[in-house]
Length: 479
Ligand code: GLN
Picture (tube, rainbow, N blue to C red):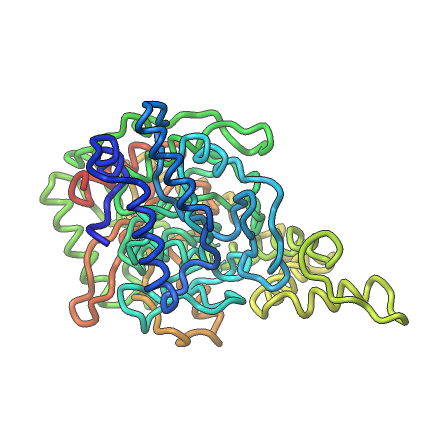
């Protein structure tokens, strides 16, 4: 297929008659068939693409085309698209087809978007490599010996491979930003509450947000402007409309005050290779007139510990519903067994190791003997961390960190070392704990390995449009 088009260019070409939707989707199907066997970014491909493309083309021809008519979007397999599987990359939901649609998906659908397929992910979004998927790992299109990151690794790989200009993911502790960084594309996590979570399979409900993987920040803003807004089905959704999210423009960085969180750049977990690419970008920002200085947020170093108490606690409760009765897989009990045996068998065989680890951890920190010592303390520490971020924004317009302190891992490299993977979430997790918006921008590659490095730009709550505008400027203007 020809050059990967951003939505703006795509829509302009379709409108001017330079691009035929049926041809585009035919080529897209062929490309996916030829290339995704190896990459494994899509768990299911929509089998009605040709009909949908033809219908969208008719709308252009008769002038009834809607704002996003005909754009191709891939959706992570934990966000419900009516009529398509929603496996969460777990055996326990292998044959589950939701009879409903997530609000964010419905809104894109109403604007004319076409859903190309459901993307691979870490099982129930727990992981950082997409290797915990029950349906095989995804490979990083930049270098297929490496993981694409996770948990939205399928979404990032589908965009990086040129299958779709954008994909939806979910981000509980970095799952949109980190894979975007590993695959050299843009990954954006909105302010908590900007997008409805209805129809999105819950992991850590106080942390989860749907986010976008795109080629530039403008497309992230475009999709968000359609998906956002209050939803009566999600009481945490907000009606706030961030400045610059509609009628989007890149925002000059001149005169902006930017703080580099030193704990994320200067620590033993951060690769020298990442530091080198970051330093170069920091010099560029200064040359463009930004005031960039080091700042310390010591509390950030507790982020991983806080998260790995709160997220498993919420997950253990959210995942209790998969009992073999209400959804998906059911391993039948023997005639001498009771319903508890059915639950146990189904859950033992249906969940993978990482999910079980989190459920056990979650139950432990919520149990009566340990609730105060772990869960309650983590909640208090979370508030301290969030407050600390607020104070930092009295001084700075934006904060920056590497998105990941390390370069992409080799496939299989850390599969048996969960703790190492947990600590690599150092830079992204605090943002979810504080409910802030952040975007990962590809800023270059490591000279030795050619692997991508991403920079994370963090903004104030509901400053999403300005954040993306600044991100676009850093990225080098609208592509
Ligand atoms: N890597 C983190 C985890 O495993 C983040 C996951 C996510 O954001 N869904 O929990």
